[in-house]
Image (cartoon, rainbow, N blue to C red; front, side, top):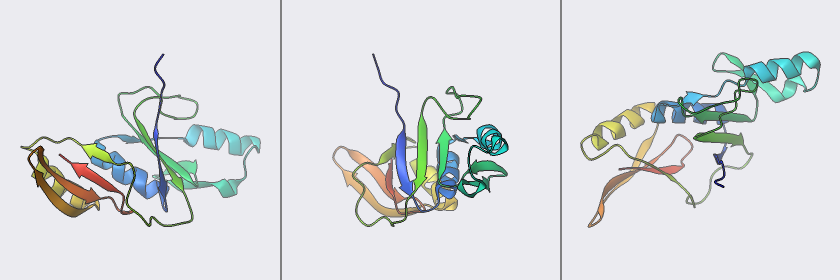
Length: 149
């Protein structure tokens, strides 16, 4: 039986990262406000672990972007399919990623996608041209590398 999964990314600002990646991939920022508001109302969680992000109640240290066509839990807003979860950590990124995303735009759209991603806050790290193909290595606003093919 297959397993469900999500990719978890350490971040200094999980809400900014969720916003960047939602825009980059055409995903939605998860709306956890129903659960946050319910738990606050019950006194089950302290207000100190919540914030307002993207105009709604949210967890202070967690934010996610999910595919708009995938299912989610209406009570919590948690995505049940393709999902990137960003969790706040105190230390900055210091070494090369051991895992990265490849974004597939296709050869006709690659340059336009690179330019769009730069407008969203990414930067080009380098261009790669090898016998197996060409791609652009980019870094998101927190310096996590990803490739645009």
